[in-house]
Image (cartoon, rainbow, N blue to C red; front, side, top):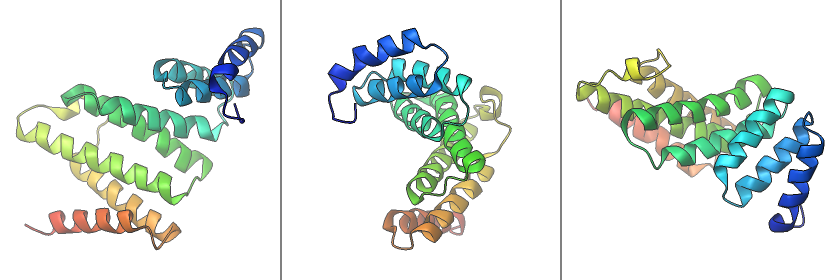
Length: 178
């Protein structure tokens, strides 16, 4: 896998996972191979099995967050909201449980939080009870605050992170526009 031969690595990793069903690292590596080959459904299964065996695998949480973020891009409404919240959950675990403070992860947390806030606002404006359809009890304003904090933290980690500055500016612009 490290040499870039994903097609060659997959059958070997599948066999290793079959022979060692209680090895979280093997499952995590298998999930990474599936993810790199674009087989995200199998990647999710392997990653979930990996953290069930070994919940200390930081990259698995990050990878799950990014896969769910990709899944959400193909959905609408309540389904999109639920998947976005799953993506945010896994990235927040990486940040809070493991202390992951990379500017990229914090930026992704901000983007997800902002997208959830905006989707909830639209659903609320259309009379859809976003709170009923979602496992979360947070309001769109809570997600907006979370987004602003995440962008600020990304800027603290990397003061030259232009996209984080831009996104934070957009939040300020829209928050104080009224």
